[in-house]
Image (cartoon, rainbow, N blue to C red):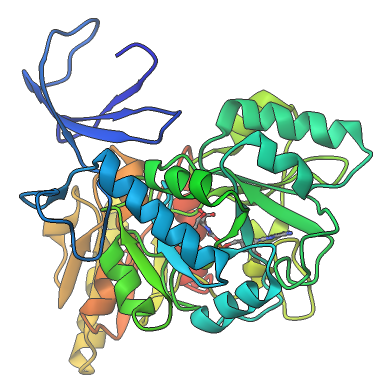
Length: 410
Ligand code: TXA
Ligand code: MG
């Protein structure tokens, strides 16, 4: 497996990621257990990252898993490219969340994206590209430092879950950038996204494929819930790998500025760029009169239908507090949901207790946020808090936004 990333999670499942193609292979490892040093293991490889239209092709389905075949990926990419060439919209998987794509150079397509999402048109879109050849025509700057920084980041993190904000070229319509002179660009690594982008040869504007104000979709069924009948095509590529949206970094200023935390952490960015600052809107709610750098920051994104409170403090205190509050609220006839972890799940009493995963693996937590609660019709959600190291920074950012920054500190 030379050249592959090899991560083993707490269920002893190996995630072998090929950075170049975005293929994620799930395997079972024998013998089970943590080992130090080299390990000899029997590995069965199954692809979990298949592609298919909503109805999988006959023979392309193996149990509940889709299998990628060269034939169906090529045919689907051609079909999607046709829709995009005609100004239509296609939802597709990326390694972070599902995107809702349209031709980013066509202002009518961008308008359609805003309409399909019910999104305010001052909230700009990210352009998705296949390679660096597509990158240069999208930016316009004489500042060599900006280009050098973008190239250094691209070298390390592209294709992958990082979005860069840069001065925009003239041919990008203001409909795509929400009226800004800057543009957001990202080169996704997901195999399906790459196949589509290589085929269509245009920069694809794609916000997350949810209705505005709903959580970002991590599976095709989420996209179908929100978008069915509103767009031309939905591509099912199975569950996505990461589950939180890409990290956004603004390179237009003197000092690179983190606008949205994601899988690529500030520490990882600092290793490439040196100093990186973090926009204030990442930490707190900004007032209506303030214009945050990423316009999306001012909207109450990523919100479950129920209102939500985050509880911070020592584990035992948090559990006692949440149980007491849940009891009071249930006596008033309210349905209560609790966002727990594998470690604490059994200790709560409420109408719905959902574990978002184990504290050992923040990646699994990032993947499981929010969605389940919407199906449970709860009135109120209490959530535990997380350490902000690694992916935890992105998780806490999304939780705080979902909770409208309502936090109880014990
Ligand atoms: O992982 C992702 O980035 C996903 C997948 C589909 O690629 N896309 C995504 O897009 O999350 P969206 O539209 O849901 O979020 C884009 C964010 C918004 O908060 C927007 O305000 C910000 O990027 N943004 C876009 N263009 C910008 C610009 N020129 N300057 C500052 N912020 C920008
Ligand atoms: Mg979004």
